[in-house]
Length: 249
Image (cartoon, rainbow, N blue to C red; front, side, top):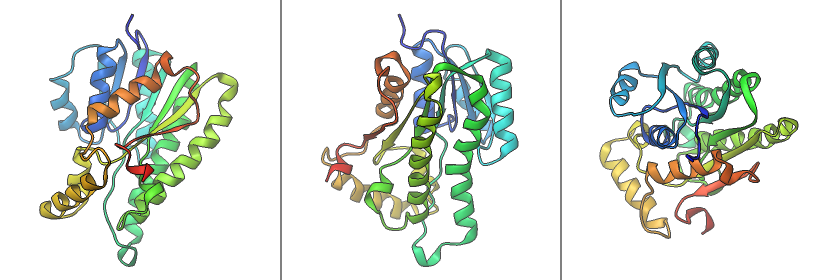
């Protein structure tokens, strides 16, 4: 028996990185998967490498109407939802003295408002006993320079997750998050920094990790599968650090 046989999973930020790796694994484990992302061309491209029962929906999680569209189309196609994986996020860098209102709004709209609104839209259609899963980050525990607003968004998301866990307890819905450490994903290419700076920053991160390397999207996907499956039936309200030990030092 596959771990997600006939389950319906909605994944945001699914056209690359952690979201795409998780979509592939969920499909392999028998799920029907709704992949969303902001770029149609990226969704079209990844569709060529996927096998199983899935649809793609162009949606920008920072926009209310796109969250409404995502859930509406997912439900029209598959009915109820079993797994809601709110993975979409961005991490542009800005030192404290250079933070702009646009930087703040862009990050909070995508990283906080998006997951909260998507959850609101999905809850009426989420099966009792289902799962809500967030991609968080260890950054709100560590205080990395230049990531003040990003860290604030992840701290806010963790606080929201705790409240949501209490609010859906009567329905048996489990709410958990994964907090990756340095993972080799396209998010580093979207920080707005020169390639050389990103590479040097990556080396620095890797040296701080007790395991001495970046993690992979596939390693995060395995955690996302575990938390969404019955293997984690008594795990609720946690933030699981998948970071090679970085948050523990």
